[in-house]
Image (cartoon, rainbow, N blue to C red; front, side, top):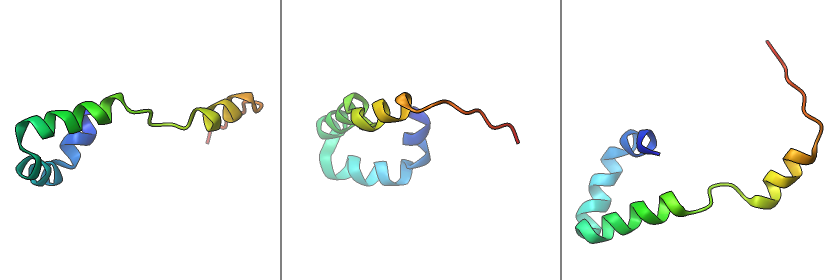
Length: 55
């Protein structure tokens, strides 16, 4: 997560300036705690047969 934040640091400065310190902390906490993947999609993918392809 930190690597992604650093990659978009120019946007984070704008968010920080807009929201202030408390709003920025709330923004980061919400994004870290949010589900990034749809649980139904993950369950369907895990139910499929696994195939490893080495190129």
